[in-house]
Image (spheres, helix red, strand yellow):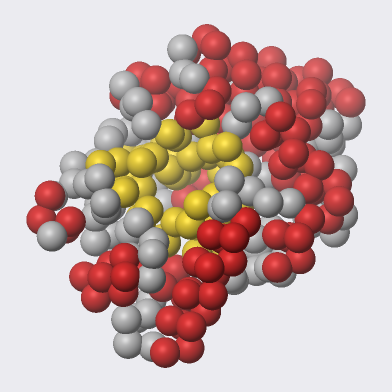
Length: 256
């Protein structure tokens, strides 16, 4: 989003307990990430929606310098609460705004409290940040992610291959998961340059012991190439669209 780091204040951290007081309402849709080898759901990504299911932009357009911190905190609380109410037993993946955080060791308290309140295990929470989120202070950003891992959360870099950071980000910090950007996935079964890039990423992540998720899969051809390339965690409309305030139903035929 192009925001500079360290925009929060000490007072912001004291406001963690008021995480749901953002000034506008929003809800979540949940999209499954599937494991095609086990034919089971690996995780559910929590995706911001308007209160009646409107698209994410209707909500994100209301986020500004004044409410970004509280919105980020409210997202965590609402996503965890929703996952608990739906009875989700797999991982829950939550996007976060690194530029909304002042001191990660303090601001994570809201998430830990929400997990305790709603009985959702910390070790089943994945925090993902898009590679396209420009953070000028790389070491500071890496420290945020390390603090998340220290607290028991899983970490993921979303949209990998599309943003500013790329390999430099991986050299500073090795997340548990990378999600390959959908622009690299689109038509990968017929596009040789994309195939070469994806295979290289898979090998790189294997050597670094990082799980790979391919996102944005829409066709059987894309699924089959990715499976043959060694990727077994997948997300996209081929498997299920996001379900508003619900868990999506997956047709078993998509695993065939």
